[in-house]
Image 1 (cartoon, rainbow, N blue to C red):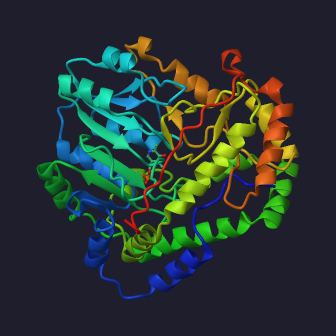
Image 2 (image 1 turned 90 degrees about the horizontal axis):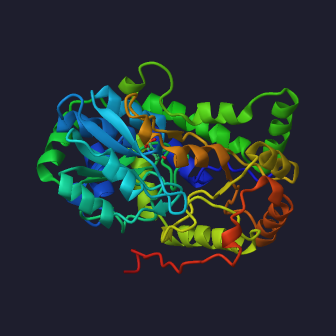
Image 3 (image 1 turned 45 degrees about the vertical axis):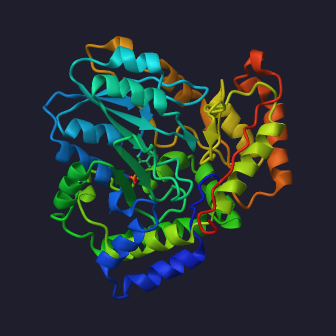
Length: 422
Ligand SMILES: *Cc1c(COP(=O)(O)O)cnc(C)c1O
C-alpha cells in the first residue's frame, strides 16, 4: 500500500530529537539561529505553532469587538475558532477552484465598514497571486495575513513583502516538520514588539510534552513503513474501524478542551533545536523532486480530470487533490489497487454569519465534498506513479471530468532557488 500519511521527517531527525531531549540547550541562541535562516531575521518569530502566533496576533491587535475578519473559505477549524475567541467575526470568502485563490468579487461583496483584516490561505502548495488582494485591502484599510502553512518551499521566501504578516507551519503533517513549531514574519515593528512582549510572558512548553509528541509520531512513522502498515490497515478494515477519522484525531496537536491553553506556551528548547536543524538542512531539491513527481502524474492523468489548484501559477504540490463525483468509491477502488488516499483531511469550510447566507462558500464546500488526495510520496518510483494514473484512467466514471479541458494540461516551468549556493 502506498500511504498518503507520510511524515516529512527521517530517522536521523528522530535520533537528533531523542539526543536533544536531554541536552543542555540555549533557547535564545536557537531562537536567533532560526531567525537567521530567513532573509530578514529581525521580522521573524518562532512559536509553538502557527495557531499560537495567530492567537497572539489578535491579542496584540486588540481590534474592537465584532470587527470582521475575511478568511479563505477553506482552512483548519482552529483558525476560525481563534478569530472567534477574540470576539471577532470570521467571514468566509469563497474560492476559485481552478487556482484556489479567494475570488476578488467575493472579497468585495464581503467587505463592510466593520471589516478589519483578510486571512489568505495558500492551500495544497499553491501560491495565491496576492497583488490584487493587496490592492483591495489597501483601498479598505485591511490588514493582510498570509497563511503559508501548506506552502513552505524554502526560507528564501518569507512571504509577500506587502503582506502585514506571513505564517509558516512546521507541524506534524507539514513540509520539513519539526513535529511542531510555526514561524511568523511580522513586518510592522510596533506590532512585532507587542507580539514578542506578550509571547515572553508565556510559560515554556515542557520538554516532557514535546517528548510525548515526539514518541507518538515516531511510533506513527514506524507504523507507516509499508509492510507493517498494510497489516494494520487490513486489521482496521476487518474490524470496520474508521481509520481516516482516527488518524485525523491523532495528528490534531492540541485536542480536547483547554485547546487554547495548550497553544499558549513558548516552544521548548528541543523543539527549537529540531526546527533549527530542519531549516538549516533543508534541501530545495526535495521540493524540485516533489514538483517533478506531481508533473509526471499530471502528464498521465485522464484528460479533463478536475484538480483544485491546477491553474495556480505557482504550485509546490504539498498535496495532490483530484475532484471526484463519487469520492468514496474512488478511494475504495484506489485502496484495492494499493493506493491509500484521504478525503478532506482537517480542512473545513468557514461558515457565513447567520444573517448573511448569501456569503455561503459554495465552491469551497464542493471542493471539500469531492476532493481525494493522491498518495504521491518520495519513495514512489515513476512506474508506480504511472500505474496510479492508469488506475485513475479506469475510474473516469467516479472522477469529475471537465469536457472543455480535454487538451493536454499546462505545465508551468518553475525554478526553486538554492539559497545555499547563492
Ligand atoms: C496546518 C495548518 C495550520 C496550523 O498550523 P499549526 O502550526 O499546526 O498551528 C493553519 N492553517 C492551515 C491552512 C494549515 O494547513
